[in-house]
Image (cartoon, rainbow, N blue to C red; front, side):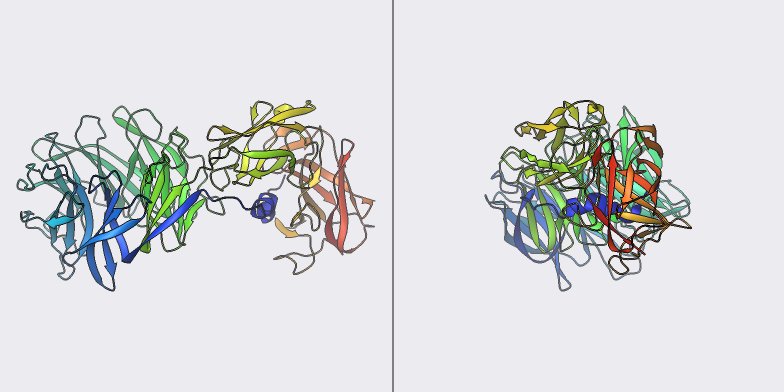
Length: 638
């Protein structure tokens, strides 16, 4: 059977996009910032139990370090603005002097020389949440960065002595062999001073084009921070992942290296840090790698790593972070989508992959506007639910999780055939629309998975595949396993909260045809099968893009649901019974009837328009099967 991409949006989108509006999944609070913030650091600076924020802020060419303390209502207030050197690029944090306060390390790169020199500046935290400039100098080796480059900056305990160390790199340096890089480590003395820098030269590849990102995390579970770094290779279209283990003397030893594929063009792909976390809940640290368009999960298996889930997007993904945003115990990914100003959520499945397809359209956006950059997933208002801090243009947005304290609500007459929008008996295997309140934590298309935005639907004790979920509407498939039953109990749960059970009447056949509008009537989702694998919507010229009337004798494809059981599999399926189709009351010859390829629960019926069919812009089309008849939809004939 043909897959009609031209009407995909209608088959699942018309009902979904015209669904009743429901409460949002997040309450959004914003705090003003005089400029655009970047390189944000989160921590409880004044020990009041709230997460505070330090970040570099650029405004009209001037950059400052600004400190914001959090209030009880999850808003932020500016308490301090500090000057910074020219070319300030990145912040990192740690307790540098052992006083229990969060301290800051600032990397700046002189932007004017052809071979810029990196500098480090330390800011020590005070009990009231403010910071002061450290009087201790930080020594760096006498090398120059390659023009236009900066070095990834991290702070952590590399040698297991309980003191914070500073790591710069991997980075290019002008005094190294071409296409090699270096890692510079400054071991901390625990009092805000550091030992002389130790350099490790890394032999990576003669095809190296650029440094990606780098983060510190305890990969080996030995209590010492390891460095995870990514690289971009010029000719192969690949990116590389390296893991380095810190030694007691400050040197770094590479313990793992591997390439991973780059989705989409390498040109214009922003380099981002790898995201770490336990994505398959086995107690070992894994990586989420960002190959330009999408993500690849690399799972650790007791010292070695293997590629697992991949989510490819049609848009560039930037600034990813991880956290359990939906509270299901699995790590999710939150990132910016470019082009466009949206914040997108990929829900983890706890097995190293994702529940939400990244290429879903519309994107499963959490926030739109002002180039959002996610910073941290954490409980910001003490209600036990994960929230999200986001940097926006001239502001800080806090997305407070609103998991809809009320249990889901639905009634029997609000479960309808997704094509006809009529309540009544529905057929196993067909698509239904369920209307109610508080049905889900968010809006998106789970793509036939059994869980979406905190929601599961059970029909007759069988989990139902979900095609669309929102707080006010769910589109799901009646499990085909229920064939032969006269009724079944429908039960909806949302993060453990259960709706009252609903008795759902079933029938072997409940045929209905999809339409291009609301209510299951009017212009049908009917395609003309033209030569050369071309498809046109059989509607009046100009009513829809590329539409035209069908001609007598042409083959058209009708899309519907509820045509009963089928035989075969994949693209070679057939309904047990052959339906009858009429155009303006004139019977047509049915060429084939089965499942639409790639569309869960959707039937496709290919028919030839009768030579004696009436002509006009709205000729009624009716389908009947198994003693049941669909409502009429219309087609344009000439």
